Length: 433
Ligand code: LLP
Image (tube, rainbow, N blue to C red; front, side):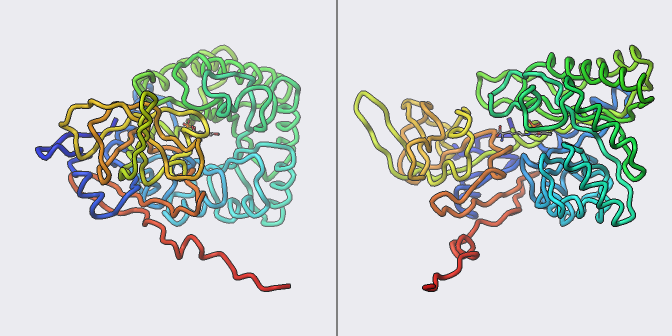
């Protein structure tokens, strides 16, 4: 959780800033990021690798939360960057992120995306499929350029997480399969291309993972494939990218491992397997998104209407919902909440927090203990820093919320609240045809 305290007025403070003041200044719904928490999460990964004495890159998976200010913080912390679209790449360039530390992902990269990656000279492309290999080859020829790539493989591992966030299992839209020869075929094709430099493998086994077994197994499977490819084609990996997926705490039910534990287990297994196959220890890259920004974010809402159904439940509606946090509706994700302006009052009511959208499934929390809430009170949900703003949407034509950074008792707006004019800015009037 981020650096929260309660002040004498009974208000929640984050990084020394009273959130009631933030609501008065910026309005609600409001995303509040504790910058120091982002930094300490980043440092947790970076220093764990340093202690292990291996060469590593910690690439922030910007899909979790991409904005110019966020990427500036990632840059300051010496992170690399994982982008999965031209929009994320464009944001990185706007943030003046070092291009040689940007890695492009995607299972259906367009010609324009690949072209931008090539002309901007980004560090690496994580190649996902045969179609992309040929597009990349043609573009590199056309531009007279070369590119480092990683081969994304699907190791056939089912990490223990929600079905929809599994990405490394056998039946997956991502990457080249290890078990049916496709990965080897892709490697061979690219080894024959002068302008493409295959540096190693990439895999990502899932998200919000609380154990290390899946990661360790993935490393083992990747090395076993590499061992046989080395015998056949003499290929030696320089980089192993093991993706993201490190779990965080949303509620007391979640028990994530300390960040260094994930890193230590990964490094240990890479060392064991390198020795087994007689490879020099490759650079180890990881791509945490959620574990960098998730617990640094809090969303602040204003309470509006309530509906009490005797002997059933009390619905308390807030001014946001599935437009700023799709995760409960999409994954049945659970969150904790507090009454941010009544932190010292006894929690003597159990309510369910409803969003504002015209959809019964727009519920943020089922059953949370709070003090008696009235219209105008502020409700804060924790750990909303990852996949909250980044998955926010315009359902019911709600404008996107604002985002503010807090640090050392100061606050700064980093994404403006959208206006209604901006919501309709792309609309054109109908003209009878
Ligand atoms: N690398 C790759 C290739 C990925 O596909 C992902 C996430 C990550 C890294 C970062 O994973 P993280 O460390 O954040 O778990 N919208 C879902 C999560 C989807 C994750 C997709 N890929 C959610 O809200 O839980």
